Amino acid sequence: GAVVSQHPSWVICKSGTSVKIECRSLDFQATTMFWYRQFPKQSLMLMATSNEGSKATYEQGVEKDKFLINHASLTLSTLTVTSAHPEDSSFYICSARVGQGDQVNQPQHFGDGTRLSIL
Amino acid sequence: DQQVKQNSPSLSVQEGRISILNCDYTNSMFDYFLWYKKYPAEGPTFLISISSIKDKNEDGRFTVFLNKSAKHLSLHIVPSQPGDSAVYFCAASARRLARGSQGNLIFGKGTKLSVKP
Image (cartoon, rainbow over all chains, first blue to last red; front, side):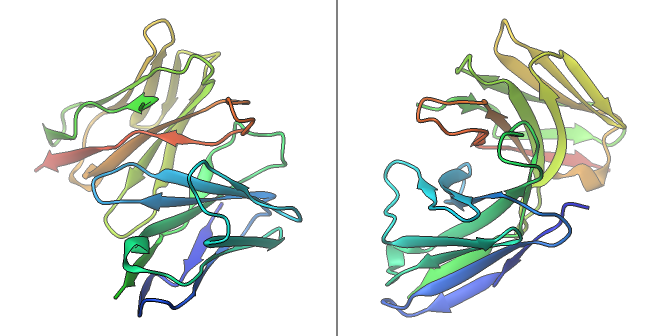
């Protein structure tokens, strides 16, 4: 159980393109999903917390107009990297937490990530 | 300032022996700790967790120990198997952090475990 699917797994595109990444919880409902970014040999860094039906909460230093998050249903959150540039190239991973909003001490389950390469 | 630290970037262990992965944290508000395993090109897979009200949690070959006074936790894998070779991340969360975030995970940089046959 607790499977999270992330799509696409790999994107290569030209500078200036906008890229959408989908994160789906396949066998559970997730009121909260998280978006992380990982640079080589670094830890996962939280970018934003996505709450179903409300605005995402962005971490300090993350541009909300650059990284648009939509959590339209209890099983789907999307991250759109708008007008992507080479410095946005990274590994983006989403996660979803089982349980309702106040059940924070539950594990997050991760998708397999999206490798984004901007030329 | 790193709140969760994994000071060993790598660890090599012989098959059948015990693997001990260590993690230190600085934020006393953390009350929930997790270990994840990650293979290349895949997302982290949840292994085991522990609440701050406990000092030990066991699940099969995996045991997590928590020493709150030392702000230290460890993951023991015994016996180690070649398939355990992966990067292991320690993560911590709190019901409420400084910015009001609930349950956000703070990750260490990971320890690469190699189990040799």
